[in-house]
Image (cartoon, rainbow, N blue to C red):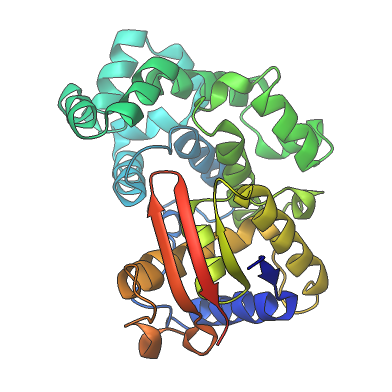
Length: 316
C-alpha cells in the first residue's frame, strides 16, 4: 500500500493543536520551557534575544527543561548573569569562565558525561568527539560581540533572510556557534525562537524545510495526515514529510500564522504526550478520548527502533 497524504486533514491537525495549546488543553503541556524566562528580563528585548541565542547554541543532546531551568537560575544570579553578556564572556579568563559555566550547570559535568558514555555510547561519542559546549559558548559570544551584541544588527547584516543566516551558521563563517550534531536543525530552531520572541520578521523562514524527528513522523501518521504502509528503508521519510508539511503550510496560510518549521513543536507535543503513551505499537490509542486530535486518530501500527521506522496505518 502506497503512502497517501491528506492536506486538508493536516491543516485541521495543526489548527487543532495550535488552539489546544493556546487554550491550555494540550494534555498536561502548558507552555514551552523557553517561555519561562528570568525575572527582570523583558520578553523580546535585545538582552532576552542574546540570552536565548546563548542557550540555543548548546541546546542539544540534553534534557531541554533542565537546561533552560539552569540557564534561568544562572541569569537571575548576579555572578551568573555575566555569562549571558558576550563582552564579559570574552573578557573573562578561560579557566574562570569554564568554572562559572560548570558552577551553574551549563556545561555537563564529568559524571554526567560518564553516564552518557555508559547508557548512550553513540550519543556520547557525538557530544565528546564532535563538539565542546565550552567552545560553542565562547564562539557564540564572539559572534554576537562582533555584531555589538545587537540581534537586530545581526539579522540586518543578512537582510533578515533565513536562507542567508542558515548558510553562514551551518557552512560559513559562524558555523562554530552550533554543534556538529544536527547543526542545521539547531540553527533553524534558533531562528524560530528569535522570530517568536522578537518584533523582527525573518524572511523565507516559511520556505525552510521542517526538521523531521521520530516524534514528527509518529504524529503525522497517527493523526492520519499521512497514511499507508512503508519503512524508513523504503522511503525517505524526512523529505516526504518535510515536503508534505510545506504543502500544508501553503494551503493553510490563512488558517494559522505559522511556518512549517513551527509545526514541529505542536507535533512533538502530540507525539510525546499523546501518541507515544497511548499507542505503544497498539492499533488503537488509549489516549484518544483525552486528545484534541482524537477524532483524527488513525488505525494501525507504528514501530520504531533507533532510526528504523515501520508504518502500517490507515485513516478512520
